[in-house]
Image (cartoon, rainbow, N blue to C red; front, side):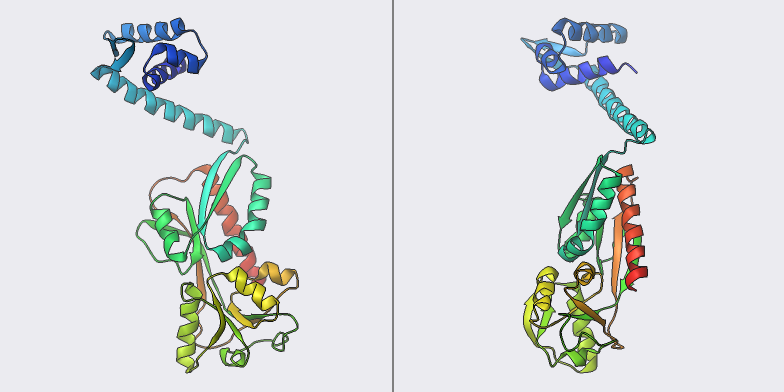
Amino acid sequence: MHARVLRYLDEVVRCGSIRKAAEVLHVAPTAVNRQILDLEAELGAPLFERIGKRLRLTPLGEMVLAHVRQTLREHAALLGRVEELKGARRGEVALATTSGLAASLMPALVGAFRARNPGIVVRLLDLPVEAIAAAVVAGEVDLGLGYDLPAHASLRVLAGNDWGIGAVMAPGHPLAGAQALRLADCLGHPLILPAPALSIRAILDEALAHEGLVAVAAVESTSTALIQRLAATGAGVAWLNPLDVVEARRRGELAYVPLRDAHLRRQALTLVARRQGGAAVAVKLFAQALEAELAARSAELG
């Protein structure tokens, strides 16, 4: 594969001199010079113009360099695939999601994924819903996960399910023992509402308007984590979906009662990726883990 001469040529161009390239490569300058001279002899034309102590590519050198770097990239990709076949899964995956999902869904999922794939680095970005799809389209992240994400021609949906909304309160709250509630049942208690910037708020406002109800917030926040903590202290009743509070419910900190209002839409949770281009193995593995987790949580929580 001529790996040595390709690496030598690439480094000479980066450093601008054979001596500096040799230092980076940890070889003798004569070894680098011999490889370059042999390649020039094989091609029958010089690759560099010697200007003082610096080297500048000739037009032929520019053409050869483009080929060299493409070959080195393909060689690196080949080595990555070889490592994958040998079971050494490596790479990086970047996911954009909301702060609520990052707190409720990601800790256990990422921990289990990293235990299975210690060679894969996971990057998580906490973004507003409207910025998640844009980050995926722009290539800033590999995957996006959020509620009611806007459709985009450059995105494909990998997984998705719908989640109902319920009332969330401290376990000792008077409403905590109910099998189901309506929005109107909660209005006699202090309300801890998601701020209008959160997608769930539009769903709640729409249902309240259909029912002719007015909800006055005692507290309003863009942080679902803060909303949960306030509800757990007995500060009031919050309206969230069961996926938001699954960990707090398991710890016995919150009670969740589903809301049965006819006009209350469910939240659509979707996992998206760019439509064009093949995903790296690390991204595929993480997407599969996310899909499995969403399916399991949906079966568990309904």
